[in-house]
Structures are given as structure tokens and as C-alpha cells.
Image 1 (cartoon, rainbow, N blue to C red):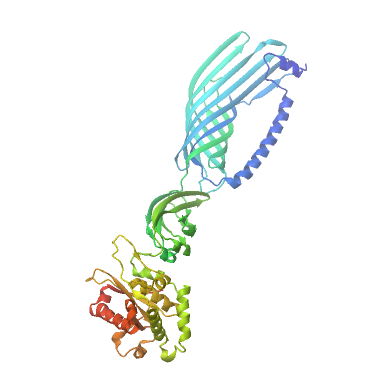
Image 2 (cartoon, rainbow, N blue to C red; image 1 turned 135 degrees about the vertical axis):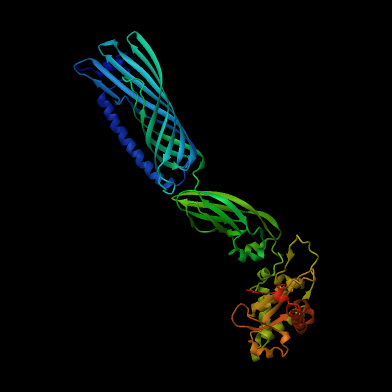
Length: 556
């Protein structure tokens, strides 16, 4: 006997029963929609899933529980007015937190809803219905199978757990109603897949098998399939630790900007804490002062290895515009990659000094020399035009150095002693242009001026740094390269105490002329005589050179 759909719907015991053909049609439609959804999700996650998963989260899932090892079904015998519907649906809430690495602790609260109807369509009062629920309260572990070095959006995992399963059943059979509650312990094993979209959200599919036995004839053991979303927060899975940061240079002197471009300002000690190699890149930026972000480049660090990575900054001439001392920060970002990428940022306090500040180290005094300054080039060009032939007898450097020195005397440039500067204050050095404009300077100012002029016309210079243990104040003067070999020193002077034979960092020695620049007002001859005498007395007779308190520092 063929029943109409309307009669089935009007049956009091079968309000949720619909035609099987119609259900299959909707099922095919759903499968098409699900396939399109997963294809689009795959495309999205391939571009946006490079973040590492975070340490805590909650999963919201829904699906089916194939309890009692039978599938949900609807059946009807055309020769009989009797129909049967057996349908299970489940959902779950999962809380998880990272224990270590890829291992997570999970707390799972699930719910299985079971709806069973056996009804006689000719008799709306006959048949029976069962509404049941099973609520597992489970504690388990999950282990992600792929390490973080594989930058895949698809993260498969396995897991297991155990806990109490609470069973509630409500049976209606005509006028008879009964309820039953039972609690048993069971366990589960699972295989799942997280599709990571961003570090805070992932799509989840999970297949579990529950091992439970409430009663032999009513066993809820079976497969559970759920799908849903994981929402995550907290710290991501770490690839590395920053063990230490050593700031090498806390005081930045603008005149040294070229030096800082090659010298590390700090060392960042990074430890690889995963079981595979990672690559680490350190970025640095001093906002408002550095030209752009400077990178160390990716450096490979083996599993468990500690590595010191140098931090540099890229400065330009705009640093010389700093007119007063300021405190600022160097912002550091440590970027690690092993398929996925992880970054950590922090900052260190530093001080930017004013453009004329000098820390008193003579080996840094050369950074104040400006051979390309227009005021310096103007003097050297003017002097070059007034001397017809400086190559005569091979004394070009000597003759030109003498004329330039006396030109400074003619311009009225004189010596002015330093004020008393407290030990915690910077010394101040004038650039050559500033000394020309002010008309005076102390020993380091005049050395910088004269050296700038000599270097601008191709004459090599060197500083003579004197830290006499018998005096409270250090002193600096210079010497220049005459360009003559030792065997031609007689062209300078027959007195060998008037010059210094020095290699200047090369294998060939040449004749160098010491000059005391504080004697500008007395002229070149007096400055030369005094400079040579100082070097003889302090450097040679008192062993200043051999004992290290008289040093010759080449200007490069």
C-alpha cells in the first residue's frame, strides 16, 4: 500500500519523517556545496596560513555519532503501514592548551542526541519513540603530527582520552513512559585534521572511535564524526628563545656614523628550542636616526644551538644634523623561520650625542675630518694655483704642507685652550669648516683642520696621541707623509731628529714630518721644530712609544 507524504506528516508519531528520495536529493546538493567550500578554503589557507598555532583554544563542532554500530536511517515497508526512523546527531566543545611542543591537553564535553521512532501510520496512537542523550566528559591529549617547519595549512593530529559517559534515555510507548540514567567510564582514540586559516582560527575535522559498554543490548560504542571551528589565543608555538642581549654601543656619536655601519651595536643571543634547524634574521631600527631598517640576513641555527647574532644600524649624514643629546631606543625584531615564521620584538635604550661630541678616543678623531667640504676644497685649490711647480726635487708634499700651514696663519686661525670639562661630559670637536668660521680651536680642532687640508690634496696624515703618565691632560698633534723614502731624508733635513721613519701600515717606510698645530700663529718652521722635539723627548727618550702612552694613529 502506497502512503502519501501528507499522511506521513499528519501522523502524530512521525512529525520529523520526510520522503527518502527528497532526502537523497538534498544530500547530493549538500555534498556539492561542501566540496566547493573545501576547495575555496584550500585556496585561501595556502596564502594565509603561515602563522604558528597558538597555545590555547576552544573548538566548536557538530556532526554524527554512529552509536551501536549502525547508521542513521529511515525505512518503510510498502506492504505495511509501519515505518521506522533512527537518527543520531552530536556536538562538542573542546578546550585545549599546549603542554610542550606539539603536545596538547584537551578537555572535551560532547553531546549525542538520539531520536528513534517506530510508528504505525494507520494508527497514530500505536508505536513507540525514544529520545536519548549521552554526555561524555573527557580528558585527553592531542599530538600534532607535522612540526612547525612544514608551512602547510593542513595539520593532521592523533589523540586519545578517557572519562565518564553519562547516558540519559526517555522512552514513550503508547501511555507508558520511562526514564533511565546510567554512567560508565570509557575511552576514545581519534584522528583529525586542522586546516589553519590564521594563527587564531582553524577549520577542524575529527573522527573518533568511542569504546563504551553501558549494556550489551544498548552499546554506545562507535564512530563519531565532527567538523567545526577552532578559535585560538595565547602564545604561539615557540621556535626560539632570546637568551641574552648585550648592548656594545650605548652612546652614538654622529661623527662616527660610517664606523657604526660596519661595527655591531649589540649582540643578540638566540637559542633554537626545537628539534630541527631554523633560520634567524635580526632587524634593527633607530627611528628618526637610521636611514632604514638594517638586517643581519638569515643565519641557520642547528637544533639546541646558541648563536650570537650581531646587530648593526645603517646611518647616513643626516645623523650629523643632531644638535643636542637625546635618549632613544634601538628597536630589534628577531625573525625565525622553519617553514612557518615567528617574530619577537623588543628595544634597548641608547643615547644619541650631538654632532660635535667626541668621546676622547683619538682613533675616532679621524671621523671629524672632512676632505670634501667646500670651504676646505676652496683653500686647497687656491693654494694649488699660486704655486707653479711643487714637484721640484720630489718635495711636493713638504712644500704644499708648509704653504697650507702658513695660509692658516695668514687667515688668523689661532689656538684656544679647552674649557675645564667634567669627566662625565663629552669633549667637543669642531669640524674644519667651523674652525675656519670661528677663527680658533683647541689642539684637536686644529689637528682636524690641518689634517683635512692635507688629506684634501692627497697628503697622508697621522695623529700622535700622547697620554703622558706625568701629566693630567692628554695631548694630540700630527705628522704628515713627505712621500720620500728613507734614503732621501736629506732633502728634508740633515738632522735625523727632525723627522720620523714610519711604515703607515704598508711594507715601505717613508719620511714623516711631525707638526705641533697649536703653534699656528708662530708659523710652520716653529711648529715643525716643536713637533719633532716633542716626539723625540716623549716618544723616544722617555720610551713613550715602546711603553704605549705615545701612539701613532693613521688617518684613513
